[in-house]
Length: 393
Image (cartoon, rainbow, N blue to C red; front, side, top):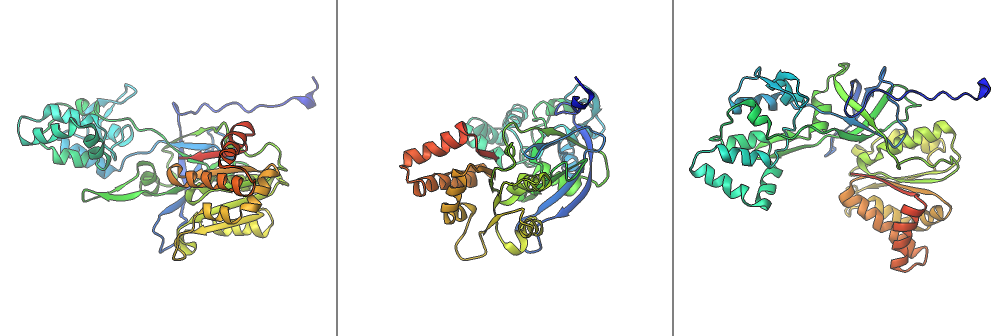
């Protein structure tokens, strides 16, 4: 075979979920404006020197760390020394403080801790109280759902763990949080950009944050190589192989992330297929994530249609599925023309509502019975033709 035909395949990176790369945060800015009820941010993580690559549609796995103040409070309630030597989950010696910072989930309690405490509380009122919870599966789920270890150790302070190891046995290990990458690697070499809504709430009189979003927003220092990450490849959530294919993207809130990557990539590829985005949030003035970029793409003719649903900007709530139904005729026409249909975001409500809207459109515009419309969406589009793709969580 001649030299000209030789293809160089990049070597796979040595980094993975089991062996994450210690990356650094190189940019961090707020996307939501003053007045927003949300705190959504844009993070840029450096992958320089990692050999990690990704394609639009892939996710970045991030191993978060616990807030130092939360770790301090847990250790104080346990009555152990932060410097006590323990084994980490991989069997390496470390300190109690260090392993609690990075190896275990502390912001959400599990059921196991309740059984562990119950065994260690002497006979009396507290023991009766905890046994009542432990013996009722529904009550137990409900109880741990809104509490962290500080809440529980304070409430059942008669339970004493005999050693740091005995306590650690009752914890759940930290699992990575997957975030859809919001950038094209070709447009931003050596970087992965993320769009993250910071989870903040209060239960039992204490302010709390989501583990990964709170870590990225409040504790991840700029230019410190200490954020363990890896790339989680998507097998299905991909741009069409043919750049002439039209795409319809539905991504309210942080669901915009992969579609920002799609648009960057399609612009770089000079794709002739049209791009249509449905985006929704609460208020246009404060929550139009990447609004300037999207409007610029539209101006340049790289975003052919942009339908916006700002739910709180009028007396009645308008969501992305309502905008789809308003444009039912065009959505159906694009689908009949071979367009791919993508949804990213909240699985519980939004994705279900969008799915139902699609079935309604197939019924209304395709003149199909409810059963045939459902079959078209669930079987033809999703399984046979694989043109309806979802990244929902």
